[in-house]
Length: 138
Image: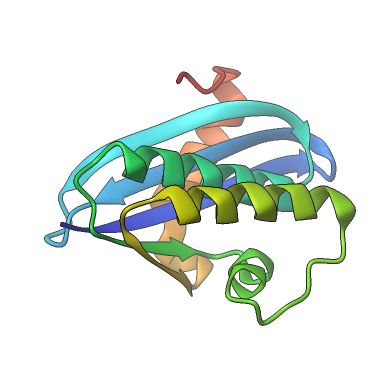
């Protein structure tokens, strides 16, 4: 099964209160799962990576054979594609976590940069995570 994932991280302040939003959809656009969670005080880039890592963990629990992640974070997407270097030491840990999960996964992985307007659902979930203060449940 091919899964299209939409991820977003939000931070009110940089660093500040942060949340993540993740949506997994099948190839027909049907929602398989949604996640909205508060992740504490982080930077926006850390929140973006937290959303990606959550997405990978969720996809690993499915029958996914191809995971296509859509994100409006150009920095994260280009770093994961190897087009941008990861200079920030704290982000290097997130990148390593994501790459470790990808190497453990039994699916093909692709990540795409999309415009913010095409990622409104994930953005709403990330902001709901901040507002709700509900932590991520395993």
